[in-house]
Length: 496
Image (cartoon, rainbow, N blue to C red):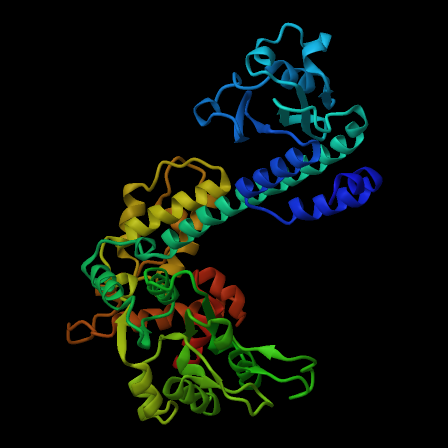
């Protein structure tokens, strides 16, 4: 835009300038754009942008001012800058040598400044900095009639700087959150020092970057999804999506739609095209939890995905290629499921490329104490409460209880105990654990101990709790400290 156009149509000029600076979010590039526009507007030879950092006014960018002096206000007129900041108004001096406001300014004579201007930058009446401009050759367009335009420009510049600073802050916060997310979901997030957990750690490290299907086996509540997340966030594609799908809770048609997506009109209620979870996980990891519960029809479709790395949305003939690392998990014995005819043998072998066995909590020794303390610390932080750990009988109870619901049951137990605890430490009474006398309860008439005593104890405890809850599964699950899903599995398994 020419000088005449600027004078004749300042609103249009501001619109163009606003579009330019408000489309830039990188703070250094934005400040350069603002200074360039200001320099051209008044035909200045030199200029700086200063921003407050706390109470300190610092030069952020400069034009034609010695680089070694950018951190000091000695290469331009400090008097003009402070006058603008003190009044909050734009200062323009067409003939600064004869301007009585700046008679005592040493920098004016030392730098041979002919004309100068300073635009204070304010956001909601608070000063955030200033744009300083001067000329050592000609008076250019340092004229009073430029003041309204420069005021409007300063307002636009201040808003753009605020937006860029907020954007920069959000980017930094996002990076920090990503780092925390990676840390929480990495191997370090799997707490424990037992040999069984060390073995899991070693497996994760070994296969994290291997582009092969991983099958995680273990009882309900052992932390299979935690292992899947650790695999993803320990790998080189940690910046890609991690998508999890619990297969056991969805009916066949809904599971198909969730996994593969659908085309608009493919079935009643399909009002628009939908991308499936396989597509959502592109480039990353797709975790299929409770894989043993999918129907034979979905098993066939999943087999095709594993073999061909392609999917078709429901109601669509188009084949879509996918690039996804698949991790599956189940608490069932898939070999037994294959023998029983409930699970395809070819799908089992496709899934069982790399296997990670997640040990039950009862096989992890004193990991139960480490986990209990971890859950206690986290719960106390949420409750804003202080407790001095566990009493000796509390620790003994944690060690002796068989934890049929594993880590999930432990977490629920600790949270409940922390809420109900009235003393300084969590005791065995606070934990409310029904600890069996294994030797006496499960001794057989011939004096031999029953090798299946734990499973029998689990069944007896579940059956008793269900009776006391009048068959209310949700209530029984809360009393046991396990999930409804786990309890439903056991009811079905034991035919209760």
